[in-house]
Length: 234
Ligand code: CDP
Ligand code: CDP
Image 1 (tube, rainbow, N blue to C red):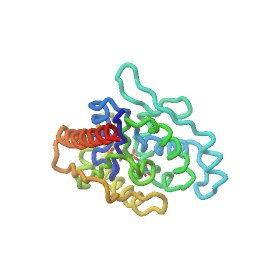
Image 2: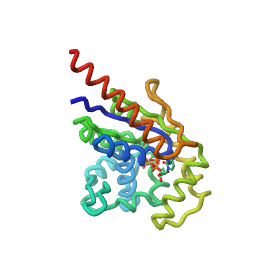
Image 3: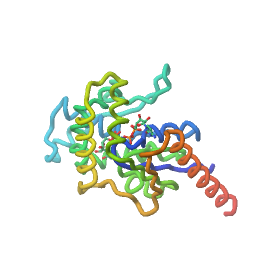
Image 4: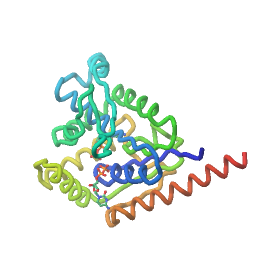
């Protein structure tokens, strides 16, 4: 009782997924990475190209895509599987980052992903990050966070992250990719990224990671208390 849904939306690389993961761990909630699902479809599209503008081809491709998440027993890290194959590292590569926003703009693909995301979050006690979580996937989420950070900071952090994974790229290439995805994700017709009126903005540009996690945990605890007191008064 008293569990809530926490939606964290925002631009690429502002800290959504790492914050969401840490918050979920502290609260004992489930973390769900909606971006990983779009990345998995984008990887499938690279390996088995299909016509994004043809509904029949899109539907056929979606029927061939099975996405799941499994916890790695050694690291405890949640990993993404595409048709039974671990694609966690591959979906973070630049080739996927450069393909994902055009794949994620297709209505049929979004509908299929949103249905799975809703099913995964049905039980509450969930932190989900993405672009349309507070607007489309869980419009009734008790806590909505809209995360931001300036482009240079986001690119610098992403470069560090990718370099530590052994990916070869440059600050300029990352900046270009983040800016292009921001543009596509915010201007598309289907579920564009936007700040909902009931979302709380958290700008991480000048925050320490621990501070942004604590801020979200604090907001979540306040909401959880409200939900509990409402339940006990009704
Ligand atoms: O981690 P990063 O911010 O780079 O991206 P991501 O969360 O892994 O999402 C990758 C891409 O998937 C985004 O740029 C969007 O095009 C798309 N996406 C979306 O459209 N809706 C979501 N709920 C999540 C991701
Ligand atoms: O999910 P999203 O694309 O919004 O960002 P992310 O994948 O969480 O990547 C943000 C990177 O910046 C991670 O490596 C974080 O550890 C790091 N970071 C942060 O999120 N916040 C800070 N205040 C400092 C670093």
